Amino acid sequence: MRIDKLLANSGYGSRKEVKQLLKTGVVKADGNVIKDPKTHVDPDQQEITVHEAVVDYREFIYLLMNKPQGLLSATEDDLQETVIDILQPEDALFEPFPVGRLDKDTEGLLIITNDGQLSHQLLSPKKHVPKTYFAEVSGFVTEEDIESFKLGVTLDDGYLTKPAKLVILESASVSKIELTITEGKFHQVKRMFEAVGKKVVYLKRLSMGPLQLDADLEPGEYRELTDEEVEELRNAKVFDL
View 1 (cartoon, rainbow, N blue to C red):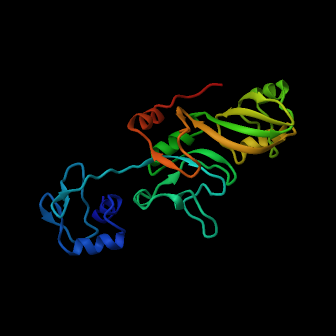
View 2 (cartoon, rainbow, N blue to C red; view 1 turned 60 degrees about the horizontal axis):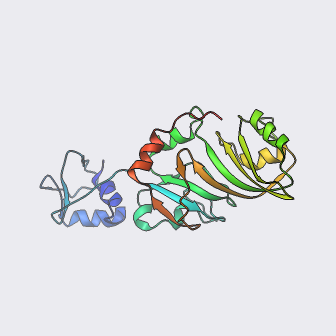
């Protein structure tokens, strides 16, 4: 890894600021001064110091956000605010990205990380990692809908969804439900209900794999995942509804 990236990811400033720091000669690897920002180092094998203080480097960051409405699940956008825009600078410097997408008007659990391997594992169609949503739906949701979702419904583009588990919390003119799916097609939850003649008016993701939305997080707040939570995500099993 390049020394400038390592220092930037460790909170020593932007790449430009790190380059200025390197010029001062206070950065060392195993006691040897490094001034070239392109120099490759191995933090697992070498002791990296700044002003004689050892750099405690970590490669990955894992965040759990309660995504609010109004933000895009993207790393950047020229016109609209993204979930990355509200991260603290010390977290944003890791250049993380959202694992999958929640619609702009959808709230709830969103994992943000720079671990591409874990992201791929959670999103891979082969893994069938479950995602559970709470929704308010315009129209009476019925037992017939439960059976339809259990078999899979045909979306507006002709795609037949995988089986989904629908739980009715309250059937009314605006019904309250929980829905668990194992795939992530574009606007899937909304389109599944449209397929049975209903409309989602509020949507919130409650869980992804073994990870539950933290009830202490207000919309727009986030926290780091614990080591145990990360390990549980890595070991998420194939899910069968």
